Image (cartoon, rainbow, N blue to C red; front, side, top):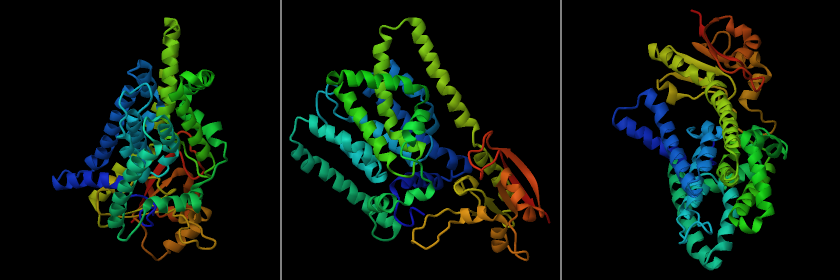
Length: 442
């Protein structure tokens, strides 16, 4: 959807396309490698970003401990979401930023990374806007000189390159940066996927993402504000964090992952406070705090990363085995919320599939309702319309267990052949504790 309308840049998906092309050329495009290689790429990039973070923090032990213990970084680090990619690139750029007192020579290589990530993910500009202003305030050069000789040329060159790539891939001239802002900000298209109150990030989002890091971050903030004259860099980071959260708060659509890019700034501030505190702390207190950090992150990292909502991934190898046995007579119908499962990268079989879509109202149609909403409003009516009694039924229907009572009519012609655990606590009424695979009776 985003690609078809030019809302998303092709640059990030192009990276994975090249990885897939590499596998195809050497006849290595097996399902396991197609699934694993993009994750390895993102994990390696995140690992390099961790090294850069450690060096940026001055090789402080608390820095690597705070970063390594962050459950949210663990949860997101190897995921091939644009937010994980954005955070890794931003962290590398932060380590290259000419922070006063940390570098002797002012280098501006970070601008290339900043320009790149702002084109690939335009919302990155929210975080980097105050940081670039801070750079213009502290630079030894004239700010006008830097803007016209460094900032603008770098930005224009990267923008032109992205326009060329996106236009070639899209098939017509498109400026994805502008289309993204127009759809998500000017037209408020993102709110189609849900809207939350303005205070959600402060009341729930940020505390959940930080977990046990929240208290030391609050204490560090108080110290910085009290001694702001000697903590200029940290004060700029706090200003960036506040500015970013404030801007995101006034955008109706909110998600935990949108906070990921500011997490390195928060962990930097936190680790600096912990480093100063640990110099005078008793050994017992050090072990106690370290234990709280470790346990407080391991538990959510393990449960959310390894247990919670795993069924929609675990079902895919089973579906691939079914498709490989007879791909001609096999067809899958996914009756679950859109984007619940991956698709052909996991199947890697030329098999017929259909899933419920949730495209926003891109054409501004009156009384528009997306397909997934139409289905859940009246499942049986949707099924009768799309699969009439005398029509051809899919060989397999994949659902959550919570949907079964609503579609017993069509399921009377099927038998349940697989029950796969998904989660202990379904987060919405459309989800369920198990993923079921129903096979057509012949």
